[in-house]
Image 1 (spheres, rainbow, N blue to C red):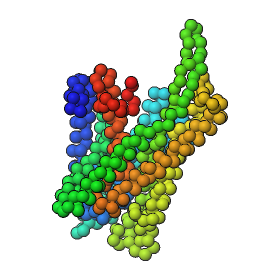
Image 2: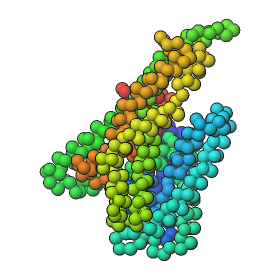
Image 3: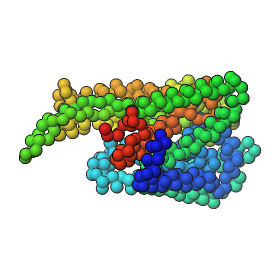
Image 4: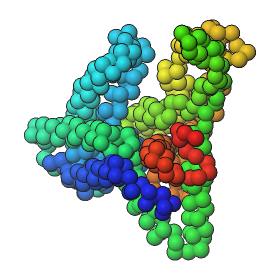
Length: 441
Protein backbone atom coordinates (compact mmCIF):
# COMPACT_ATOMS: atom_id res chain seq x y z
CA UNK A 1 0.00 0.00 0.00
CA UNK A 2 2.84 2.43 0.90
CA UNK A 3 4.54 1.57 -2.38
CA UNK A 4 1.30 2.37 -4.25
CA UNK A 5 1.01 5.73 -2.49
CA UNK A 6 4.60 6.52 -3.45
CA UNK A 7 3.82 5.57 -7.07
CA UNK A 8 0.91 8.02 -7.06
CA UNK A 9 3.20 10.93 -6.23
CA UNK A 10 5.79 9.82 -8.81
CA UNK A 11 3.32 10.70 -11.59
CA UNK A 12 3.44 14.52 -11.99
CA UNK A 13 0.02 14.84 -13.61
CA UNK A 14 -1.72 12.64 -11.01
CA UNK A 15 0.14 14.35 -8.15
CA UNK A 16 -1.02 17.75 -9.41
CA UNK A 17 -4.64 16.58 -9.68
CA UNK A 18 -4.66 15.17 -6.15
CA UNK A 19 -3.09 18.31 -4.65
CA UNK A 20 -5.60 20.57 -6.45
CA UNK A 21 -8.47 18.39 -5.25
CA UNK A 22 -7.21 18.48 -1.67
CA UNK A 23 -6.72 22.26 -1.73
CA UNK A 24 -10.21 22.95 -3.07
CA UNK A 25 -11.78 20.61 -0.50
CA UNK A 26 -9.88 22.42 2.27
CA UNK A 27 -11.24 25.75 0.99
CA UNK A 28 -14.75 24.29 1.05
CA UNK A 29 -14.32 23.15 4.66
CA UNK A 30 -12.91 26.55 5.71
CA UNK A 31 -15.94 28.30 4.19
CA UNK A 32 -18.18 25.96 6.18
CA UNK A 33 -17.29 27.84 9.36
CA UNK A 34 -18.24 31.32 8.08
CA UNK A 35 -21.76 32.06 9.46
CA UNK A 36 -24.46 34.14 7.80
CA UNK A 37 -25.15 37.42 9.63
CA UNK A 38 -27.89 37.74 12.23
CA UNK A 39 -28.03 34.13 13.53
CA UNK A 40 -27.25 32.98 17.07
CA UNK A 41 -25.40 29.75 16.25
CA UNK A 42 -25.49 28.47 19.84
CA UNK A 43 -29.30 28.60 19.88
CA UNK A 44 -29.41 26.95 16.44
CA UNK A 45 -27.22 24.12 17.73
CA UNK A 46 -29.63 23.61 20.64
CA UNK A 47 -32.53 23.48 18.18
CA UNK A 48 -30.80 20.80 16.06
CA UNK A 49 -30.15 18.72 19.16
CA UNK A 50 -33.94 18.30 19.39
CA UNK A 51 -34.45 17.60 15.68
CA UNK A 52 -32.76 14.23 15.28
CA UNK A 53 -34.28 12.39 12.31
CA UNK A 54 -36.10 15.38 10.82
CA UNK A 55 -35.64 16.92 7.39
CA UNK A 56 -33.33 19.46 9.04
CA UNK A 57 -31.07 16.63 10.21
CA UNK A 58 -31.07 15.08 6.72
CA UNK A 59 -30.10 18.38 5.08
CA UNK A 60 -27.44 18.94 7.73
CA UNK A 61 -25.94 15.53 6.89
CA UNK A 62 -25.48 16.35 3.19
CA UNK A 63 -23.88 19.72 3.86
CA UNK A 64 -21.47 18.45 6.50
CA UNK A 65 -23.02 20.25 9.46
CA UNK A 66 -23.12 23.61 7.65
CA UNK A 67 -26.83 24.04 8.30
CA UNK A 68 -26.33 23.47 12.02
CA UNK A 69 -23.69 26.21 11.99
CA UNK A 70 -25.78 28.48 9.69
CA UNK A 71 -22.73 28.90 7.46
CA UNK A 72 -22.63 30.55 4.04
CA UNK A 73 -22.54 27.00 2.59
CA UNK A 74 -25.67 25.93 4.51
CA UNK A 75 -27.46 24.93 1.29
CA UNK A 76 -24.39 23.07 0.08
CA UNK A 77 -24.76 21.50 -3.34
CA UNK A 78 -28.29 20.15 -2.79
CA UNK A 79 -30.05 22.72 -5.08
CA UNK A 80 -27.76 21.64 -7.93
CA UNK A 81 -28.40 17.96 -7.26
CA UNK A 82 -32.16 18.53 -7.19
CA UNK A 83 -32.01 20.54 -10.43
CA UNK A 84 -29.88 17.84 -12.07
CA UNK A 85 -32.31 15.08 -11.08
CA UNK A 86 -35.29 17.10 -12.36
CA UNK A 87 -33.56 17.82 -15.70
CA UNK A 88 -32.59 14.16 -16.01
CA UNK A 89 -36.17 13.08 -15.41
CA UNK A 90 -37.46 15.66 -17.90
CA UNK A 91 -34.99 14.27 -20.45
CA UNK A 92 -37.06 11.08 -20.57
CA UNK A 93 -40.48 12.77 -20.52
CA UNK A 94 -40.37 16.17 -22.28
CA UNK A 95 -39.46 16.02 -26.04
CA UNK A 96 -37.37 19.23 -25.92
CA UNK A 97 -35.08 17.93 -23.19
CA UNK A 98 -34.94 14.50 -24.83
CA UNK A 99 -33.80 16.17 -28.06
CA UNK A 100 -31.07 18.11 -26.24
CA UNK A 101 -29.88 14.92 -24.58
CA UNK A 102 -29.36 13.29 -27.99
CA UNK A 103 -27.53 16.24 -29.55
CA UNK A 104 -24.17 15.29 -28.05
CA UNK A 105 -21.79 17.89 -26.63
CA UNK A 106 -23.82 20.92 -27.76
CA UNK A 107 -27.01 19.55 -26.27
CA UNK A 108 -25.23 18.67 -23.02
CA UNK A 109 -23.84 22.20 -22.83
CA UNK A 110 -27.37 23.64 -23.07
CA UNK A 111 -28.64 21.17 -20.46
CA UNK A 112 -25.83 22.19 -18.11
CA UNK A 113 -26.75 25.85 -18.54
CA UNK A 114 -30.43 25.12 -17.85
CA UNK A 115 -29.37 23.13 -14.78
CA UNK A 116 -27.41 26.13 -13.49
CA UNK A 117 -30.41 28.42 -13.93
CA UNK A 118 -32.52 25.84 -12.11
CA UNK A 119 -29.90 25.72 -9.34
CA UNK A 120 -30.15 29.50 -8.80
CA UNK A 121 -33.96 29.33 -8.72
CA UNK A 122 -34.02 26.43 -6.27
CA UNK A 123 -31.31 28.04 -4.14
CA UNK A 124 -33.37 31.24 -3.96
CA UNK A 125 -36.49 29.32 -2.94
CA UNK A 126 -34.58 27.26 -0.36
CA UNK A 127 -32.81 30.39 0.96
CA UNK A 128 -36.14 32.14 1.53
CA UNK A 129 -37.52 29.02 3.20
CA UNK A 130 -34.47 28.74 5.46
CA UNK A 131 -34.43 32.39 6.51
CA UNK A 132 -38.16 32.26 7.31
CA UNK A 133 -37.69 28.95 9.11
CA UNK A 134 -34.80 30.31 11.16
CA UNK A 135 -37.00 33.09 12.51
CA UNK A 136 -39.45 30.49 13.91
CA UNK A 137 -36.78 28.38 15.60
CA UNK A 138 -35.90 28.69 19.25
CA UNK A 139 -33.05 27.28 21.28
CA UNK A 140 -32.96 26.44 24.97
CA UNK A 141 -32.63 30.04 26.13
CA UNK A 142 -33.85 32.22 23.26
CA UNK A 143 -34.69 32.60 19.55
CA UNK A 144 -32.25 31.56 16.83
CA UNK A 145 -32.62 34.98 15.17
CA UNK A 146 -32.59 37.71 17.87
CA UNK A 147 -33.57 40.54 15.47
CA UNK A 148 -36.00 39.68 12.68
CA UNK A 149 -36.25 42.30 9.93
CA UNK A 150 -36.11 42.71 6.16
CA UNK A 151 -32.33 43.18 6.20
CA UNK A 152 -31.83 39.74 7.77
CA UNK A 153 -33.97 38.03 5.13
CA UNK A 154 -32.28 39.88 2.26
CA UNK A 155 -28.67 39.37 3.39
CA UNK A 156 -29.40 35.78 4.36
CA UNK A 157 -30.93 34.98 0.97
CA UNK A 158 -28.10 36.62 -1.02
CA UNK A 159 -25.44 34.96 1.14
CA UNK A 160 -26.94 31.48 0.81
CA UNK A 161 -27.40 31.74 -2.97
CA UNK A 162 -23.83 32.99 -3.37
CA UNK A 163 -22.59 30.17 -1.14
CA UNK A 164 -24.33 27.55 -3.28
CA UNK A 165 -22.84 28.94 -6.49
CA UNK A 166 -19.36 29.05 -4.90
CA UNK A 167 -19.70 25.39 -3.87
CA UNK A 168 -20.86 24.55 -7.41
CA UNK A 169 -17.82 26.38 -8.84
CA UNK A 170 -15.48 24.50 -6.49
CA UNK A 171 -17.04 21.21 -7.60
CA UNK A 172 -16.63 22.06 -11.28
CA UNK A 173 -12.97 23.03 -10.72
CA UNK A 174 -12.31 19.70 -9.01
CA UNK A 175 -13.93 17.82 -11.91
CA UNK A 176 -11.95 19.78 -14.52
CA UNK A 177 -8.55 20.10 -12.85
CA UNK A 178 -8.59 17.53 -10.05
CA UNK A 179 -9.38 13.84 -9.64
CA UNK A 180 -12.86 12.36 -9.34
CA UNK A 181 -16.28 13.98 -9.64
CA UNK A 182 -16.14 17.35 -7.86
CA UNK A 183 -19.81 17.53 -6.87
CA UNK A 184 -19.70 14.03 -5.39
CA UNK A 185 -16.43 14.71 -3.57
CA UNK A 186 -17.87 17.83 -1.92
CA UNK A 187 -20.82 15.79 -0.62
CA UNK A 188 -18.34 13.08 0.40
CA UNK A 189 -16.21 15.60 2.33
CA UNK A 190 -19.27 17.01 4.08
CA UNK A 191 -20.46 13.57 5.23
CA UNK A 192 -17.15 12.16 6.48
CA UNK A 193 -16.39 15.45 8.27
CA UNK A 194 -18.84 14.33 10.96
CA UNK A 195 -17.35 10.83 11.41
CA UNK A 196 -14.18 11.68 13.43
CA UNK A 197 -16.17 13.48 16.13
CA UNK A 198 -18.60 10.56 16.25
CA UNK A 199 -15.84 7.97 16.70
CA UNK A 200 -14.13 10.11 19.35
CA UNK A 201 -17.42 10.32 21.26
CA UNK A 202 -17.84 6.55 20.90
CA UNK A 203 -14.40 5.81 22.34
CA UNK A 204 -14.54 8.38 25.15
CA UNK A 205 -18.04 7.46 26.35
CA UNK A 206 -17.96 3.68 25.92
CA UNK A 207 -14.40 2.64 26.68
CA UNK A 208 -14.92 3.19 30.41
CA UNK A 209 -16.22 -0.31 31.19
CA UNK A 210 -15.76 -3.85 29.86
CA UNK A 211 -19.35 -4.10 28.62
CA UNK A 212 -19.01 -0.75 26.85
CA UNK A 213 -15.80 -1.90 25.15
CA UNK A 214 -17.41 -5.15 23.96
CA UNK A 215 -20.52 -3.38 22.61
CA UNK A 216 -18.37 -0.79 20.84
CA UNK A 217 -16.16 -3.44 19.23
CA UNK A 218 -19.24 -5.37 18.04
CA UNK A 219 -20.64 -2.12 16.61
CA UNK A 220 -17.36 -1.48 14.76
CA UNK A 221 -17.40 -5.02 13.31
CA UNK A 222 -21.00 -4.48 12.14
CA UNK A 223 -19.95 -1.18 10.51
CA UNK A 224 -17.14 -2.92 8.61
CA UNK A 225 -19.43 -5.75 7.46
CA UNK A 226 -22.18 -3.35 6.34
CA UNK A 227 -19.64 -1.24 4.43
CA UNK A 228 -18.26 -4.37 2.71
CA UNK A 229 -21.80 -5.46 1.79
CA UNK A 230 -22.54 -2.03 0.29
CA UNK A 231 -19.36 -2.25 -1.80
CA UNK A 232 -20.38 -5.72 -3.01
CA UNK A 233 -23.92 -4.67 -3.99
CA UNK A 234 -22.76 -1.35 -5.51
CA UNK A 235 -20.31 -3.19 -7.77
CA UNK A 236 -22.66 -6.09 -8.54
CA UNK A 237 -23.78 -6.40 -12.17
CA UNK A 238 -25.78 -8.86 -14.23
CA UNK A 239 -24.09 -9.63 -17.53
CA UNK A 240 -26.37 -10.22 -20.51
CA UNK A 241 -24.37 -11.84 -23.35
CA UNK A 242 -24.58 -10.17 -26.77
CA UNK A 243 -23.31 -11.67 -30.03
CA UNK A 244 -22.51 -9.43 -33.01
CA UNK A 245 -22.70 -10.82 -36.54
CA UNK A 246 -19.81 -10.40 -38.97
CA UNK A 247 -20.07 -7.57 -41.48
CA UNK A 248 -17.84 -7.06 -44.51
CA UNK A 249 -17.23 -3.41 -45.41
CA UNK A 250 -14.81 -3.12 -48.32
CA UNK A 251 -11.89 -5.36 -47.48
CA UNK A 252 -12.45 -5.27 -43.74
CA UNK A 253 -14.49 -7.59 -41.55
CA UNK A 254 -16.34 -6.02 -38.61
CA UNK A 255 -18.15 -7.69 -35.72
CA UNK A 256 -18.21 -11.38 -34.97
CA UNK A 257 -17.20 -10.88 -31.35
CA UNK A 258 -19.09 -11.61 -28.16
CA UNK A 259 -19.66 -9.02 -25.46
CA UNK A 260 -22.20 -8.34 -22.76
CA UNK A 261 -24.55 -5.66 -21.40
CA UNK A 262 -23.71 -4.88 -17.75
CA UNK A 263 -26.92 -4.22 -15.82
CA UNK A 264 -26.25 -2.88 -12.33
CA UNK A 265 -28.14 -4.32 -9.39
CA UNK A 266 -28.33 -0.80 -7.98
CA UNK A 267 -29.03 1.27 -11.09
CA UNK A 268 -30.83 4.04 -9.20
CA UNK A 269 -28.11 4.54 -6.57
CA UNK A 270 -29.15 6.67 -3.58
CA UNK A 271 -31.87 8.57 -5.45
CA UNK A 272 -34.77 6.34 -4.20
CA UNK A 273 -33.62 6.89 -0.59
CA UNK A 274 -33.35 10.66 -1.10
CA UNK A 275 -36.83 10.85 -2.66
CA UNK A 276 -38.37 8.64 0.05
CA UNK A 277 -36.73 10.60 2.87
CA UNK A 278 -37.77 13.94 1.42
CA UNK A 279 -41.39 12.86 1.07
CA UNK A 280 -41.68 11.31 4.53
CA UNK A 281 -39.71 13.94 6.43
CA UNK A 282 -41.62 16.88 4.96
CA UNK A 283 -44.92 16.41 6.90
CA UNK A 284 -43.22 16.12 10.31
CA UNK A 285 -40.94 19.07 9.62
CA UNK A 286 -43.84 21.21 8.37
CA UNK A 287 -45.87 20.36 11.49
CA UNK A 288 -42.85 21.29 13.65
CA UNK A 289 -42.63 24.73 12.03
CA UNK A 290 -46.42 25.32 12.18
CA UNK A 291 -46.59 24.14 15.78
CA UNK A 292 -43.77 26.44 16.84
CA UNK A 293 -41.40 23.64 17.77
CA UNK A 294 -41.32 19.94 18.51
CA UNK A 295 -42.15 20.42 22.19
CA UNK A 296 -45.18 22.63 21.51
CA UNK A 297 -47.09 20.42 19.06
CA UNK A 298 -50.24 18.86 20.56
CA UNK A 299 -53.26 16.69 19.76
CA UNK A 300 -53.78 15.32 16.27
CA UNK A 301 -50.77 17.19 14.91
CA UNK A 302 -48.55 15.49 17.49
CA UNK A 303 -49.93 12.05 16.57
CA UNK A 304 -49.38 12.74 12.88
CA UNK A 305 -45.89 14.05 13.55
CA UNK A 306 -44.97 10.93 15.53
CA UNK A 307 -46.28 8.68 12.73
CA UNK A 308 -43.83 10.32 10.31
CA UNK A 309 -40.89 10.14 12.73
CA UNK A 310 -38.08 7.60 12.09
CA UNK A 311 -38.58 4.49 14.21
CA UNK A 312 -42.40 4.54 14.05
CA UNK A 313 -43.99 1.50 12.35
CA UNK A 314 -45.97 3.65 9.90
CA UNK A 315 -42.85 5.55 8.90
CA UNK A 316 -40.78 2.37 8.47
CA UNK A 317 -43.36 0.61 6.27
CA UNK A 318 -43.89 3.68 4.08
CA UNK A 319 -40.13 4.27 3.89
CA UNK A 320 -39.33 0.76 2.63
CA UNK A 321 -42.26 0.82 0.19
CA UNK A 322 -41.26 4.19 -1.28
CA UNK A 323 -37.61 3.13 -1.67
CA UNK A 324 -38.62 0.03 -3.63
CA UNK A 325 -41.11 2.05 -5.72
CA UNK A 326 -38.60 4.79 -6.60
CA UNK A 327 -35.91 2.18 -7.36
CA UNK A 328 -38.14 0.71 -10.09
CA UNK A 329 -39.37 4.14 -11.18
CA UNK A 330 -35.90 5.63 -11.65
CA UNK A 331 -34.51 2.47 -13.27
CA UNK A 332 -37.37 2.55 -15.79
CA UNK A 333 -36.51 6.16 -16.66
CA UNK A 334 -32.75 5.71 -16.93
CA UNK A 335 -32.73 2.38 -18.81
CA UNK A 336 -35.00 1.90 -21.80
CA UNK A 337 -35.07 -1.80 -22.85
CA UNK A 338 -36.79 -0.96 -26.17
CA UNK A 339 -34.08 1.54 -27.09
CA UNK A 340 -31.36 -0.95 -26.09
CA UNK A 341 -32.94 -3.62 -28.30
CA UNK A 342 -33.18 -1.21 -31.24
CA UNK A 343 -29.51 -0.27 -30.90
CA UNK A 344 -28.53 -3.93 -30.93
CA UNK A 345 -30.45 -4.49 -34.15
CA UNK A 346 -28.87 -1.38 -35.67
CA UNK A 347 -25.35 -2.69 -35.07
CA UNK A 348 -26.08 -6.31 -35.91
CA UNK A 349 -26.17 -7.66 -32.36
CA UNK A 350 -28.50 -10.11 -30.69
CA UNK A 351 -28.89 -11.97 -27.39
CA UNK A 352 -28.36 -15.72 -27.95
CA UNK A 353 -31.69 -17.55 -27.82
CA UNK A 354 -33.77 -14.36 -28.06
CA UNK A 355 -35.35 -12.90 -31.19
CA UNK A 356 -34.21 -9.35 -32.03
CA UNK A 357 -36.64 -6.52 -31.35
CA UNK A 358 -39.61 -6.94 -29.04
CA UNK A 359 -38.55 -10.27 -27.50
CA UNK A 360 -35.11 -8.87 -26.68
CA UNK A 361 -36.65 -5.81 -25.04
CA UNK A 362 -39.00 -8.01 -23.00
CA UNK A 363 -36.08 -10.18 -21.87
CA UNK A 364 -33.99 -7.17 -20.77
CA UNK A 365 -37.02 -5.72 -18.98
CA UNK A 366 -37.63 -9.00 -17.11
CA UNK A 367 -33.97 -9.20 -16.03
CA UNK A 368 -34.09 -5.60 -14.78
CA UNK A 369 -37.25 -6.35 -12.82
CA UNK A 370 -35.67 -9.34 -11.10
CA UNK A 371 -32.31 -7.76 -10.18
CA UNK A 372 -33.77 -4.42 -9.05
CA UNK A 373 -35.86 -5.96 -6.24
CA UNK A 374 -33.03 -7.46 -4.12
CA UNK A 375 -30.93 -4.32 -4.65
CA UNK A 376 -33.83 -2.09 -3.54
CA UNK A 377 -34.54 -4.25 -0.48
CA UNK A 378 -30.87 -4.22 0.53
CA UNK A 379 -30.59 -0.45 0.25
CA UNK A 380 -33.86 -0.07 2.14
CA UNK A 381 -32.20 -2.03 4.94
CA UNK A 382 -29.12 0.23 4.75
CA UNK A 383 -31.42 3.27 4.87
CA UNK A 384 -32.81 1.97 8.18
CA UNK A 385 -29.31 1.35 9.55
CA UNK A 386 -28.96 4.67 11.45
CA UNK A 387 -32.07 3.97 13.51
CA UNK A 388 -31.07 0.33 14.06
CA UNK A 389 -27.54 1.27 15.13
CA UNK A 390 -28.88 3.86 17.57
CA UNK A 391 -31.43 1.46 19.08
CA UNK A 392 -29.14 -1.58 19.30
CA UNK A 393 -25.75 -0.03 20.06
CA UNK A 394 -26.82 3.48 21.16
CA UNK A 395 -24.40 4.85 18.58
CA UNK A 396 -23.63 8.53 19.26
CA UNK A 397 -23.44 9.53 15.58
CA UNK A 398 -25.16 9.01 12.23
CA UNK A 399 -23.90 5.83 10.52
CA UNK A 400 -25.43 4.12 7.51
CA UNK A 401 -28.23 5.30 5.31
CA UNK A 402 -27.76 7.65 2.39
CA UNK A 403 -24.50 9.05 3.71
CA UNK A 404 -22.69 5.70 3.82
CA UNK A 405 -23.89 4.73 0.33
CA UNK A 406 -22.64 8.04 -1.06
CA UNK A 407 -19.29 7.70 0.73
CA UNK A 408 -18.75 4.18 -0.63
CA UNK A 409 -19.80 5.10 -4.18
CA UNK A 410 -17.64 8.23 -4.37
CA UNK A 411 -14.64 6.47 -2.83
CA UNK A 412 -14.87 3.60 -5.36
CA UNK A 413 -15.23 5.99 -8.30
CA UNK A 414 -12.23 8.07 -7.22
CA UNK A 415 -10.08 4.99 -6.61
CA UNK A 416 -10.92 3.73 -10.10
CA UNK A 417 -9.73 6.99 -11.63
CA UNK A 418 -6.48 6.93 -9.65
CA UNK A 419 -5.91 3.28 -10.56
CA UNK A 420 -6.46 4.00 -14.25
CA UNK A 421 -3.68 6.63 -14.09
CA UNK A 422 -1.36 4.14 -12.38
CA UNK A 423 -2.02 1.32 -14.85
CA UNK A 424 -1.69 3.66 -17.83
CA UNK A 425 1.84 4.49 -16.69
CA UNK A 426 2.74 0.81 -16.13
CA UNK A 427 2.39 0.80 -12.35
CA UNK A 428 0.47 -1.78 -10.36
CA UNK A 429 -2.90 -0.66 -9.12
CA UNK A 430 -4.09 -0.67 -5.52
CA UNK A 431 -4.53 -4.45 -5.53
CA UNK A 432 -2.65 -7.11 -7.48
CA UNK A 433 -5.60 -9.43 -6.92
CA UNK A 434 -9.25 -8.47 -7.04
CA UNK A 435 -8.95 -5.55 -9.45
CA UNK A 436 -11.28 -2.61 -9.19
CA UNK A 437 -13.97 -2.77 -11.85
CA UNK A 438 -13.20 -0.50 -14.75
CA UNK A 439 -9.49 -1.42 -14.84
CA UNK A 440 -8.50 -3.05 -18.09
CA UNK A 441 -6.71 -6.35 -17.89
